[in-house]
Length: 218
Length: 353
Image 1 (cartoon, chains in turn yellow, green):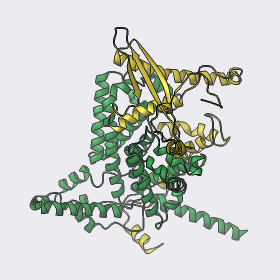
Image 2 (cartoon, helix red, strand yellow; image 1 turned 120 degrees about the horizontal axis):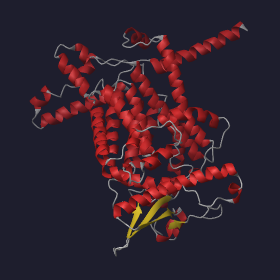
Image 3 (cartoon, chains in turn orange, yellow; image 1 turned 180 degrees about the vertical axis):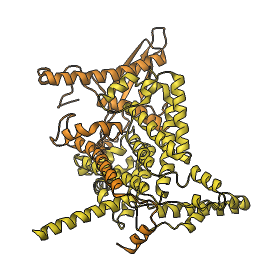
Image 4 (cartoon, chains in turn green, orange; image 1 turned 135 degrees about the vertical axis):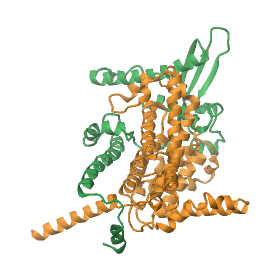
C-alpha cells in the first residue's frame, strides 16, 4: 500500500463491506456485459438476426435488459463508410382547387432549431433504413420462414410510411399525399473538383422506387 | 505444483485488489456534479425542442403514433409511460412535468429524487420516439442513468446550498463534502461505456473502405444534409482529408487503451474535444458533439473540476468587483466554493481519476 492509499483508508468516508462489494461486483459484471454485447453482436452480423453463433445467443439472453436501459446500439457512427442521405418528398393534393403543396423532409428553412431539423432528418433516414420491397425475391418467396420475416418487416415499413402520410394529410387537410423516398448521392472528390459541380446539383437527388433492390443497381 | 498454485493465487489476488481499487475507491463528487449540470442542461434542451413538435410526434395522428411505437419495440422489455396517453392536454402536462424535472435535476434540487425521475423520463422518450432518435439520445440516456447512481447533488447544487444555509455558520457537517464509493462507481461506468462506444466506433469504421483509402472525411463534409459550415474547400488538400480520416479511426479504436495512462490521457481528451467540436461546428450536430464532450469530462479528476470551478468563481468575482459590485458579491456568492477547497483538500491518488 502506498502512503496515499494508507491516508485514504484512514480518512475513509464510505467503506463498503465485502458482501456489499461482492453483490455490486455481480451487478456491474452483468451491466457491463449488456454494454458490450449489443455493439459486438451488431458488428458480427451482416443481416439482422444472423451472425456469430456466440454473440447471437448471448444477445438473446441480455437483450431484455439492454433494451429496457436503452443500451442496444451498434455505435457505428459514419460507418462502415459515410453514405448518401435519404430524404422524403411529399406532395399534398387537394380536391377543392388549392394548389399542391410540396414539402421536403428535412428542410433547413422550416425545421428550426437544428435539433428539430435533425429529428425530421432521422425520421426519413429511419424510414428508408426500414425499407423492404413489396415483392420478395424468388429465393425468399419459396422459403416460408424467410417469407414470414420478409412480410413482417414489409408490414412495419408500410406502417411507418402510412403514419407519415396520415400525419401530413391531417395537418394540411389534403385529399391525397404522395410520399417519395429520395437518395441524395454524394459527389466524390474527383467529380466535385474536376467537373466543377455542386453537392446540391439536381441530378444528385435520385427518386427511389418501391421495386426490389438489386445488387447491380439502385 | 505448489509453486504454480502460489503464482496463480497471487495473480488472482492481484486482479481482485485491482478490481476493488478500480471500483470501490472513494472519490469526491465534483466531477459527477459537473456532469449533472452539463448533462441536465442538454436533457432540458433536447426535450424543450420536442415541445415545438409535441403532437406531430407524440399525437395519435403524429409521425409515430403509439401503436406503431409499441410495435417497433416488438417483444423487448422496453417500456414508456408515454405509450398510454394520446390526449394533447395530458401529453402537454406530462411534457411540462418532464421539463420541470430536468431543470430541478440540473440545478440540483431534490437531486436524489429528480435524478431517478430524469432517468425514467429520458428512457420513456427514447422508447416512445425511437423512430426519430440518434446518437445524442444514446449519450443522454447513458449520462442520466449513471449520474443517478452517485451523489451528484452533493456539490454545485441547490441541495448543498440549502444544507449549508440550514446549518448556519457553525454547520461544519453541511460544509463537509464526502468522498464516496458510489460517486466512483458512477464515474467508472461512464468512462467504461465511453471506451466501448469508441472501440466499436473505430472497429465499425475499419470495416469500411473510405476510412482506409483516406476519403471518408470528404464524404462527411460533402454531405449537404449534415453540413453546417462549408468545408468542401478541403478537396484541394487530399492529404489533409486522409490525415483526418486515418487519425479518427486510430483515435477511436485505441481510445480505450490510451485514455487510462496519465501521460496519454490529456492528448486523447484533447482529440475528443477536437473531433466532437468539429462534428458540432461543421456537421450541424452540436448537441451530439457537446454531449460526447460532456461524457468525456468523466475522465477529468474531481480535484481539477474543483480547481476549475474555484478559478472560474474567483475570476467572476474579480470581474464583478471591478464593475462595482464588490460588497454584494463578497457577501453572497463570492466564497461559495473557495472555503471548501481550503477545508477539504481532495485526496490524491484514489478514486476515479
